[in-house]
Image 1 (tube, helix red, strand yellow):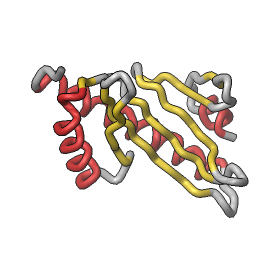
Image 2: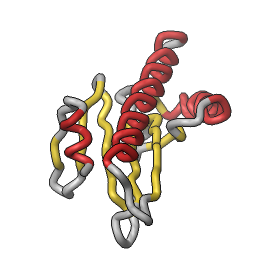
Image 3: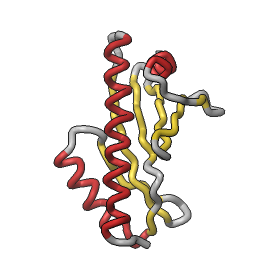
Length: 133
């Protein structure tokens, strides 16, 4: 159903080696993970393309806290990589334990993609406001 919803919107995607559906939206990878024992939870995870240095983590936390206060979607958080770089991730999650209609799935897919791209734009503005490490 996920690929049907993406195809219906004209979105391009691929399926990675783990079987996860992934799309590139404005340079940001957005994953569509099915989680839970029955794969009943859909997590749409936006991997924002901008990468920052470890010295920027505090500012990124402040950004995410403000974002999460002011925005309903996506939930934003900071991810610090093993190589000392940091990035912002956005998530929209839906629990379909009792099933989902095509219309409901379409709504959450477009929400995850649109708000994930809005988050990415806001993160890009951080780089423009002040160069980060």
